[in-house]
Amino acid sequence: MYNPSAEMPVTGTVEEVQHHVSGSGRGGTRFIIARMTSIALAPARYTAVPGISGRRMQICHLVFRGYPMNFRISLFTVLLVSLAALGPLMAQTTAPHIVDTLVHYNGDPAFLEKLIAKLDSVDAMGLLSTTPQDLPTVLAAIKQHPRRLMCQGRLNLDDPIALDLVDLFHAAGCVGLGEITSPLKNYDDRSYWPIYERAEKYRMILHFHTGIVNRMTPDIPSDISADRMRATTLDGIARRFPKLTIIGAHLGNPDYAWAAESARWNPNLYFDLSGSSLIKHQDDPTFWKSIFWWSGVVSLHTPPGTPNAFEHLVFGSDVFMGEIEEFDLELARYHRMLDACGVPKTAQDNIMGGTMWRILNAQK
Ligand SMILES: [Zn+2]
Image (cartoon, rainbow, N blue to C red; front, side, top):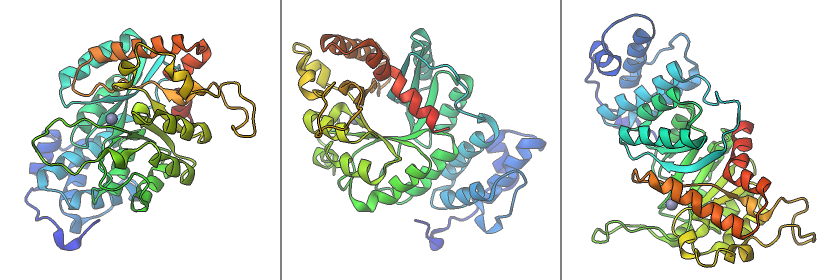
């Protein structure tokens, strides 16, 4: 967390920063931007700014101290964009047909255009996973397309400023955190609990990678292990933080049974089936009936009143390198599997978007 001795030297004047952040001019919002930016860059001069809550100022104060100057400026821009321009992110009042719970922003604005066109064509909304650095671009896109985009913040659980980043993403209007991946300890390690507690306070959705994970640079040593990301590690988090909504990506591949059984008893735990699993089982799509087996079962050993077992699935495309065609491919894989398993249309509608839409509206 914050270390006073690590404070960065102040190298920018208000005017230089004003030019950098918002262009020339001293009127209205831009003047406030310059004032606030000077505060972020020189916390010793921290004073109240009319119209900005003390809590948000405190967040600025904490978040920016540990970063190099350029990064502090860009992060501060993010916060200001959220304060000055966004307004309510849930501007849409009618449910989209599809909610894609996992689509990654690759940092290329051209990809955003393709994504918006794709989402428009099927009446979908995407929860766009973004880094702090890309937040200004993503927030501007959300402002332009509030019916199509929301954001979820990418953070590393082991980042010493992870808690501050939760605050930042929340202040920016992001509805969740994800995709969370590659922790140095198991997801349910108690040292991560303050992060989950903070996210629960904000009613954010946590989207964790689960199961086997890619290895894109095999020649470079890495401290990553799929064992720390097993689906079973989400069970304890779901129980300890009942107001959190948790999504496990990839249904714990290949621990499908453990993932589904955890979801069966945890009403706040969902999974997506993005990744290689639907490809692996494309020749035996009814395999999934053995995983989601409890539809209509009445027993003391299964929670009463549970919906169709498949409704613990939500849709996620996991488009992550700008490969927008994967959206349609994944959609087709979901539909083929759900049809083969005889999942009723009402349940399929919930899987595709209804469930997430209900959760997102409950956050407001
Ligand atoms: Zn993943």
